[in-house]
Image (cartoon, rainbow, N blue to C red; front, side, top):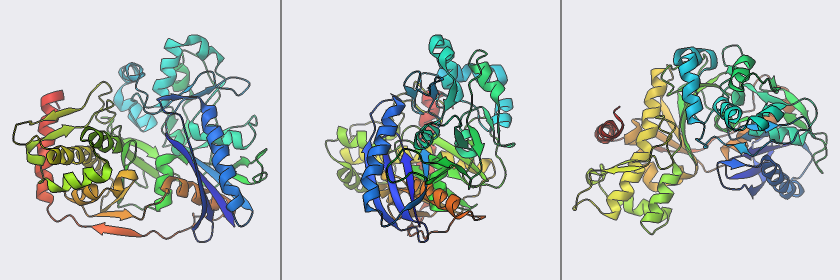
Length: 470
């Protein structure tokens, strides 16, 4: 039996065809998305069609099921005909920071944390619909339903029936869903939209089928699984269990863990999301991860391999240079208008090697703080799994164990979000009580000098306090 896993991410759509019994990838395809923090949702569907059409001829048998994992939080507001009323606002669009702050002031951080699992920031869908209502009331009046990016793509696969659906994992990132009860909180959405009450997708179970494919050559009749958010799919693809912490270094940086019980953090640092299996996924997100390395490499006139070489030539602590890597504002800590800041510059330490090392250390310090915050809400961290494009950096692999304070395992390179979506599709097709278990191969890096990491993090915290007062 073969299944498709679709990852509709910020930058592209990636499609994997997978043998449901073994987890072996038999074909893969990819199509790019437009750049920017607001995007026409049709671009995702067109990219999905392109990537699917590329993959299907290379699958050695019929596809039984498909699942879509998508970038979290994006606001897809559609009218009664099912067409977007405006371009979708993505997770990394920070224009709704003021609305997030107003929502928190009105309801109280503690109340929202316990009702929705999180304190809203600009990334969340709730903040974005509030921005829409305040700044584009005519568009807000036209909204018939609000979907998430993965909901939108799943809905297109089904031929846009009257019923749309989502899963509890992605729903838990909206700001108007209860991770405790597993139900929507439509009154929060209506209040944010000035009394308007858009329809919301049905929430289906982790192994349930949302609908069947309609109108896609070579896929018609295949089951469409619930789908989920990208972080939830990544966790499912890795098969993580309590005690594992995943640090993902893609466009954004995330640190997340699986817990049996919901987590609440009134400071807003940890978002108490749900996962894709019926458990919970406390998560810390930063806006600045791999792009920090890319931007620094560009500044130094080299590529990522050259940045690795430079960073590994410098000593721990980068000769006293400390980078607060908030190049695109920041979500955690909540500094949407911040910019990157380099501290400790002196004539003797302003070298390419130290700057490269400071970029790697600054990026990782933010994620180390995330792991500490996860421990603060009860998540265990016996090992860290390092994934994402920047996880393949030799400098990141060398520096991460001491800065994160625990042994690090780097799984073999794979599209784990798309793989998690494929696993969910296989689960829905099989109808079993638990998802399939597919092998995971990792390379281990030991934390040999954690005291050095403690010193670097202390200096990082001092720099942040000087700049932002905390």
